[in-house]
Image 1 (cartoon, rainbow, N blue to C red):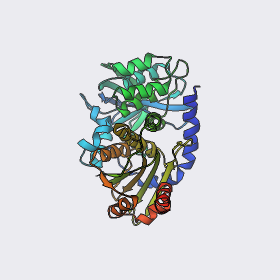
Image 2: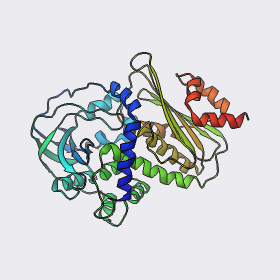
Image 3: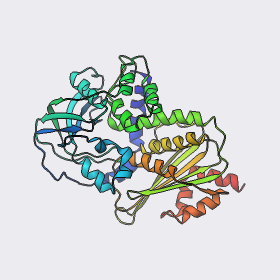
Image 4: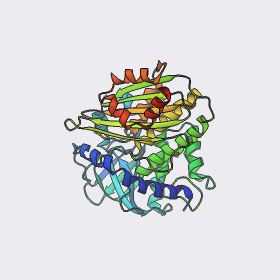
Length: 397
């Protein structure tokens, strides 16, 4: 197995153990939604295109298409980059995601040349929605919600699938057929050519990239974070060569019951993500965090994939500015928040960083402003934050 895929296994298995505290809390937030319509044992429609690879039973995994009973262009159902702009609320996202039925077929992660796996890869590499017919061994049941991944509707073992018009995206095809190119290089090359993160993630999960005989199926949960992490690291390596930002800049965004504030500081690269879940069940105040210094980190972040999704957005902004800086991210989730995947963190951070920043002469002025914007008292953040303490010590030394 290649070093890249070995990294995925060791990193994310270790990370899941560290992630349990936050995960246990978020499991309580998972809503008990059920699809409003009944789904039969046969469905015809157009996959966005979308493929899901589970992680339970690893190294054996369940994979299959996500298929709605809708024909035509369904791309919007699996393009999280557009949801903040086009959906009026998280309920809208949940509504159309619940129409996606998941087919399940078991395969070893090394079975990349299995006929069914090859079919799913063909769908994942498609440029447009794929008209499809699927039969299941029983009626699809249940729903899926998770903080790491987009929700979807009922699931069932798939008996047979047939599809047409799966025209391969040219850029994805080039990376797929280059069996001498490492997976990490394929991912970054596609990003540099302008492909959406979500598109790269889906293809990556089906074992579409990497050197010959070393390709593997990757659970969707892992593929999302692996792509965010891989691209983020490449960008960070580049921005570390830039001059340091000369002011304190604050960017903000509110959407889908979440508030994001991103404070860029005059420092060499360092990054911290602080997230608070406030009053979602009652009066609870849950605060989680993780950080990295200039040299980066080797272990999986304790707060999960949101750490890497937001870090990618920050790195994108700094690359665009041709600067390096320290970054402290404040995220607050309020009553009505529903876990729908780390896409919300990545896209909210991107939206925040597109806004006109507020500039401050010193860190205390920035924190004074934030104190009136955040619902959790600032002293809680100061107590939790490693980088804030470091900046304040240097300021008042």
